[in-house]
Image 1 (cartoon, rainbow, N blue to C red):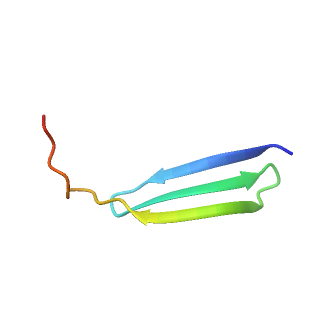
Image 2: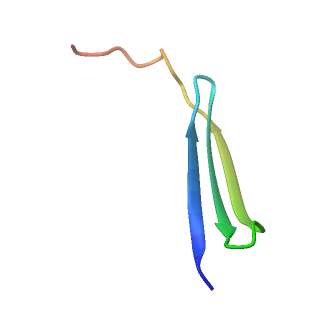
Amino acid sequence: MKSYIGIDLGGTNVRVARITESGDILMELKSPSYAGTIPCSG
């Protein structure tokens, strides 16, 4: 069975999901993105 990984890099959250070819969600993770909390060196 093939599975796929989708990644959403948003401004407030990062979400990752592993899904099957038929669209069933096998695993889903969500975490704050911490955008703007780490200073850029550029």
